[in-house]
Length: 207
Image (cartoon, rainbow, N blue to C red; front, side, top):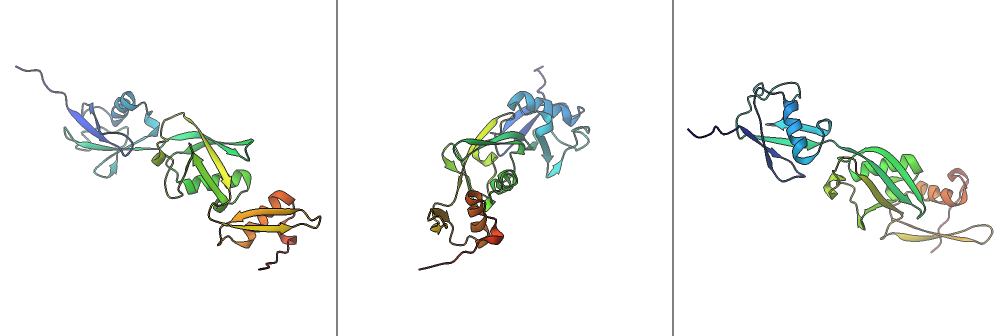
């Protein structure tokens, strides 16, 4: 008689090629998570497992969910990491425990709370590539547990308009903005460099 073939499951993930794990359907789902840990080094607390669209409880068994041999399990990742944002060439803003499945827009909101720069004026770069607001950090290949991620931030927009502001001492400040930038955001930008609060600023436009 030939040796008995061990039951196996296929693990599907957006971020990894499909791989297989051996399992016993009397074991708790937590045991499946440990098998996945051995394969891709993602600890169980960062794993969410789904079968037919239903999330699996780590304390229940595969037999409880009627998971058959050769079934496909979907793995979603919920990883947190440390983010360092290089700001003004010198400063580094340290943001702890950012979820890597957050969108770039959500990350910009977190950065705004740290350095008081409106998300609409932030451009984030990773390894020279600008990050799009509607994508997640994982979409850019950032999904390894414990990684320290370094991003660069530029204030302004490459397709914006340049505004010159004359101060009373005849100094001229120049800023770049999107054409649709709100006046209040322009005033906050001026505030960053002049300490003139927006309420006392009077801006005028000349052709």
